[in-house]
Length: 413
Length: 142
Image (cartoon, rainbow over all chains, first blue to last red; front, side, top):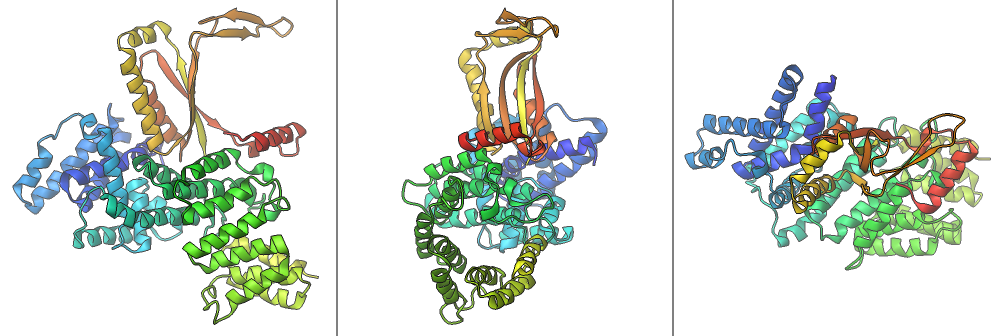
């Protein structure tokens, strides 16, 4: 890729949300706006490297995208007034398109439409990265290790779904915001978790995706500064990401929390995380805020031994009540093991593993046998531990994590 | 996760002063404020500081065997006045360059773009690096 091409992409990353947002507001048609913006980007990728960058690149993109939108509307023979509404300020200065209040509303509308409940989870993630994050289909496909046409198809289908469901392009009302914000936060969290624990492939952490998720969460907070749970999510991301430098060794193998060199934790990220956590607490913590509080408890501890495990148990209990989830129960069991030893923890884990009390909800992941195997190992029940850890290694889809589990099996007496 | 420092410099004092003299202070604050707001809302800004142009002393090391020379500013011997910095987290150098283009809004100004290496890039077994790691751990780092 040439430098000129990379420069175009950099500008696009910074500006795409504002450009697509403003266009969608003009046309009232999100799909059309996204198509037109992509056409403008494609033109820039051809002509800027060839003819040099225009003096006002953002204005150029905006004007070109507007023209493409008008062409499309003309071709489709849409009613006249709509076309006039766009055309009347065809050559206005770019600054007029982008006054600050409007930008916030546009970006917010864009986020809420990209994360709309009519879309599948995969489509929400792809669309958000593309229109709000300004990533290309190629970049998204690379990040999720899927073929490019798959991502393109997801985005195309998403735009058709939004059009078919007649989802309006507008900043959400306060009522709608309350209802749908958790869905938006969930999409950002999914992007982050894919970056922080890659579900497949060789790398354990894909920092580019985790970084983008944090950036997008800051973008959301910039447009919506009074939502505690958004700060809770940002805090969770910052505090989780603070451990990235210590999470893998030189070979890229996973290092568990207990063995991590805490001097390698990113203190800047911890500080930002704790500051965001402060903002997340005016009405009591929500599910992201509670997870952030747990991560924060680890972050301020000097070692595993001096960690406030009792507080972590309490936070997991609270989290289990507001967002019941077997993974949360499993983590609580790990905290119990740290505070009170492996025996009471094993009782909790067996309850999760039990087909009746646990309802088999963790049968599909390697996490349950991983934790159970480790507890059995600590209790000296080597034969059972081996069986569990082998099963965990078999089920684990991340190659790096699997290697750690296999090592655990090999280390058994 | 690349971090870049955008370093604000004055390379032509007279030109920049002339340009700055032409706009009211309030307007300049708004200009800077809007840009800062843009950096914040784009989710890339980690830190920023500006420097007082009035209080300015320079210590110059000219020769190996000679004592360093202290010169009172504001403009001393410096050819390029360092005026402040932004620390940003972006996906690529090109993105840092793009932000830098938006910073230098007075003729006579320049913005230098430098990558901030992480502590990981230094030998981890060096005692001085370990001291620094320890300090970063206890005090928090950017």
